Length: 247
Length: 238
Image (cartoon, rainbow over all chains, first blue to last red; front, top):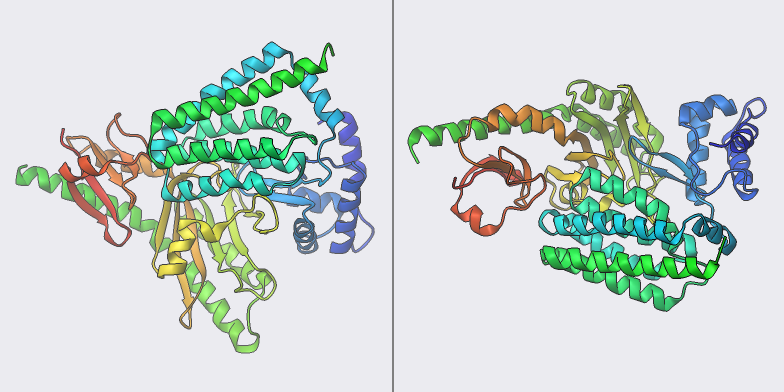
């Protein structure tokens, strides 16, 4: 966390007045999100820490978090690396995405794309012999979900989620972690405010084909389709990077 | 196959059954507490609230204390069962430092990636068929974030399914715990679930989660391990 962000957070999470109640917590956190003091994807401190920082007891804090969840302002992920994360509806601007993309050179993008090709291809191949019936159902739902995603941020999350699920279906902890890390780095650059419905349809068709190959237990086809899909995405990224010029 | 060899296989299947069953017995107090809360609530109010379930946290912690491989335990409620939450989990998890903590997750179906538990087999099977279930082996991406088996027993009150009492068991724990049993079998062998997917094995040629094809299954020696779950010990032709 940068110093600036730490400072913002200490202000945002300073103790509330006496008798801090759920509504006050909701107001403080939702304002901070709308002001951009808490940004999309940022993790909130643990419940215990939050409770100490804000000076509220666990019960109203839990109520507040539940309310923020219902409003879609935070999401809570289960698990050891889980917690509550800020979910800003605004999504990244074109300028913010361009800044992030410009931080890569073309050869760095290609290198990252090669790594993603290796991971995604291996995951799809293994998923063909290891996916549970539950996983196969889930893959087919996630393959289509991009059609109903709105805006660049949700499209990016939905797209990434499909690819992570392929690694989940491979029942591989390491491939899943690797895929998730690469998706966090590259997946968010794939969808832009100017991305077209045609691009969505093409991505969905490719996802569906990968899911079907896994379902049919065709390991070689699943691997090839996953790799072709990643290659296509990497080329799109590189084209965009080149258009940005010397930054 | 000699009678002696068959005996070795049968004994291994029996020991595996005892190992897998033990976790189910730990869930009884959780299921009983859930039954009690729901029965009491129905006397004066139509449905309990989420807060009324928080009393089971201490029982969930006790479940995990009894088996070091357990990393989660609690209740998962049938949609529409509670007065105040459409979907709800009262779940505890073991943290890396060994302490127990509540687990929160996004079950709100309005989000773009909710934890959609009614679709998961460990919930779906008890809900639809009224029988116990072990989900997995699977990589619990949204939950435990490791390879896991999810145990679940249905809680039924007055003929209605109200949810499951469950626990997450680390697959790595079961692997270690079963290795000495698996080693007694002098041929490639695997404990497989109802989908013929490998839970644990004694051979480098199989992988966790891998599905054993129908043909090798038909030629294998098979021994029931947990009959109602369809779990079997499969000894392949060497």
